[in-house]
Amino acid sequence: MPELPEVETTLRGIAPHVVNAQLTQIRIREPRLRWPIPATLAEKLTGETVTGMTRRAKYLLFHTRAGTMLLHLGMSGSLSITPADALAEKHDHVDFVLDGVSCLRFTDPRRFGSLHWCDQNPLEHALLKDLGPEPFASDFSADYLYAVSRGRRISIKQHLMNAHVVVGVGNIYASESLFRAGIHPARPAGRIAIARMTRLVDEVRQVLTEAIAQGGTTLRDFSVGDGRPGYFQQDLRVYGRKDQPCHRCGNPVRAMRQGQRATYYCPTCQH
DNA sequence: CCGGACGCCTGTCGGC
DNA sequence: TGCCGACAGGCGTCCG
Image (cartoon, rainbow, N blue to C red):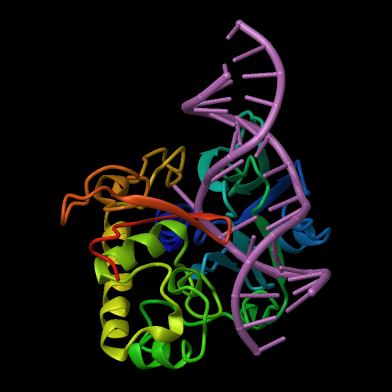
């Protein structure tokens, strides 16, 4: 489900409720996620106070004195704040009771999400240590993207979605940024000139910035935690718009599949 | 090393 | 109405 804007929106919605709260109880109803929840997670976290919350790629990091919990929302995961005694519904897999009164609740129908524990520096965790740059960091530059694309025959869309290249860009925002940059999604990454990479880096940042400002994209049931949906779906230019007119040229938007994922593009405006 | 396919899950939707 | 396949915002792993 969530790409960087949705994870960032979740962070901003959840952090005010969680930071400085003590985790007085952890309830794990279903440990079988993408990876099993570590058996020691509850004992490590119980009694700890969350000192801060950050994001790296699509992971949320919950910092405590004892260590850091990593949380990934997968395709269908979401977080919400509820009363501590709220009845759990189907797919409400984990509760973190906050100061005994409220509750951070992890819900995930497809169970592609995951929870991890790090005693040491979380950035050294196996899942984080080899990730590419954050899209808003200065090391995600046109020169960098150009350099890591040389000799690569993979399509630029799949290249952009590779977290070893740049993190946070998933299926929606890859299509959207390539449309904005006027680059055909099937173009080999190694056959894009530096000037077009400059444009692409700009458009990736622009579309992510706009999406964050809108609270992310709500296609099905994504919400921030307080139940509010995101509104960026109103601003999508190609994603999900198969056969509808391109906003720039009026010709129908096309859909195709790349690496088992849907891609949307305008064959007139993108080359 | 690279690129492509697979599998992990459940829910929903469209076509017959 | 019911069934069945396709598809869904991710990503690690395996294979050639």
